[in-house]
Length: 340
Image (cartoon, rainbow, N blue to C red; front, side):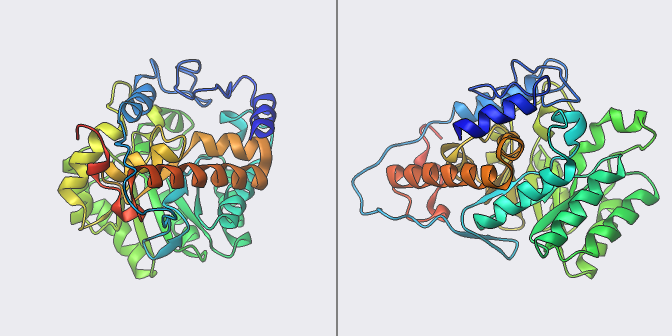
């Protein structure tokens, strides 16, 4: 991964510094770019809240070859990891590779390692075009996320997503805070329960499952259950839409306690390695989404870089499972965390 990171640093110069520790300090306020909004406190809170979680090391047991596999929304995964939906390579990552190359790297690398990648959405048509073309190229092994557009654009893009062979469709409702989209004449907005239910019903009618990304409170999680969503992603959009929010790891336990068992609980925010993955699982997630590290891997090494990152992640997850006595990822409960 050293060569991949060096290449990414060269290609993403001015947009991402590929810091040894990706904590949002060097890129604070750089939106567009890879930074967090304004003070970047939300970005930093993601990283710091997860870093503060400590693992209980246990070695008197017989776990030697733990099972990292899991099934999420009917999708078999070799480990509980998905690539988060990120678009806009040209204005967020420096344009060192094209949108198409980025999407193909994410989806292709994930498929090689038997996990799944998500695709993003945005104002320029080439973002969703690249996503749809990329999902077709991997025979539907990808999940498109559509932004919470106002008016006809939402239905039009949902129709495009549902015309693909994808197993699920998502909405990053946390993108409702992206004022840059409104300035570009393409407004996004929060959705009422009735509006969300209409989207869910449309997705279900097409035989797909629906993921709602951007849940940071118990109230919103319960509303997601009520409107029929199949999964939520506990996420503050990487700290890029609202300053001064808590980190995802801070709110995940209370959200999981409130709705787990009635809806699939996913989470993202500050996840960098396999040790972070097991922490999120222990805090209540069924699987995690990872953003910036995937971007660095894709820009710096294309599909091979993504696959290499995932292979390293798997090794760390296996190590963490052995050293905490988890025979399977389903056994990663709060008992493996100190003081929780």
